[in-house]
Image (cartoon, rainbow, N blue to C red; front, side, top):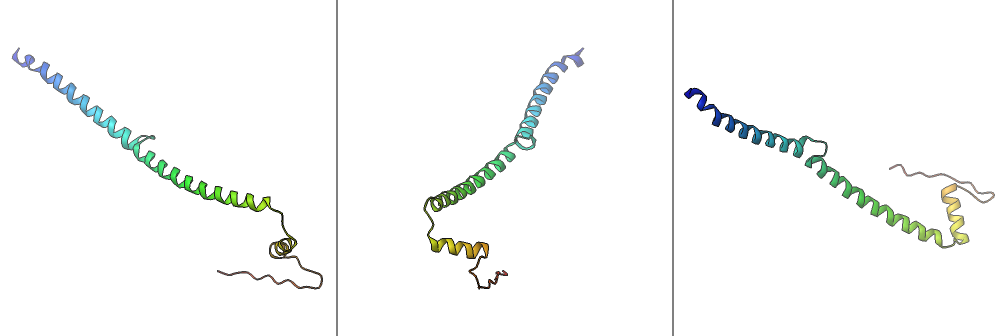
Length: 102
């Protein structure tokens, strides 16, 4: 009978120990191994900040291009664009394409 009288507190201690062990494992799982873990959130936040910076650069480029499109082109600018971008020439001219090999 004395053998069975010590089982009650032992079971209670085991339950508490298992409860803390389970809570610790669950905490580790959520922090490091889950699909929404802290590590993946930190990585996603870094990626978000990089994309936000790239978006700001691209938005500045878009604003610059919109300003360029809003003003009319002069005849000299049209001729320069035609020669540089489309390799157009005047009658009797020979166009040589020179490429930078860097």
